[in-house]
Amino acid sequence: MIAIMYFILGGLIMNGEKQIFDFSSPETSGEWRIINDVVMGGVSKSSMKLGTNGTATFSGILSADNNGGFASVRTYVENVDVEGFKGVIIRTKGDGKMYNLRFRTDENYDGVSYQAKFKSEKEEWTENKIPFKDFVPTFRGRTVPNKPELNLKILSKLEFL
Image 1 (tube, rainbow, N blue to C red):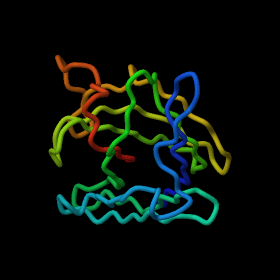
Image 2 (cartoon, one colour; image 1 turned 60 degrees about the horizontal axis):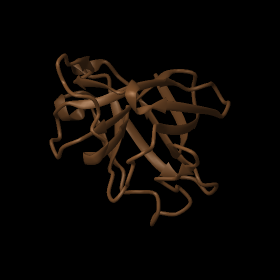
Image 3 (cartoon, rainbow, N blue to C red; image 1 turned 90 degrees about the horizontal axis):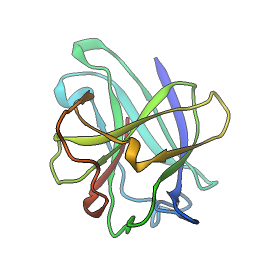
């Protein structure tokens, strides 16, 4: 299966917007790292490339071989003050499939993350407004009960899956 998604992380919702990643240059786009199912023996492949129009393209080939089936891209969230904001806006043009947006609040590679789902529209730009209250604690895709809400003061990573 080939999945292609173009995305712009547009900003945070408040009275106005604050862009947290600008994909117009390598200096302002963040340092994104590919993390695929190869970390557990899978064979999925993905990449992320900056476009010339302020977008980034995340694309890949998913495979369920060897108990795999995920592809993701992750970056650190540094010096982003989200206090007082209500959510995040992500502008996407994709393949019509569901994706996950995750925040992590610690430095662990494989711990609890806070996840919200959004749907891309096939070959059509869509603006997804996701309130922070909609992010639920998960571990490897499963909801984790009895965890606190997403703590905006200690965001450390942002991930697309």
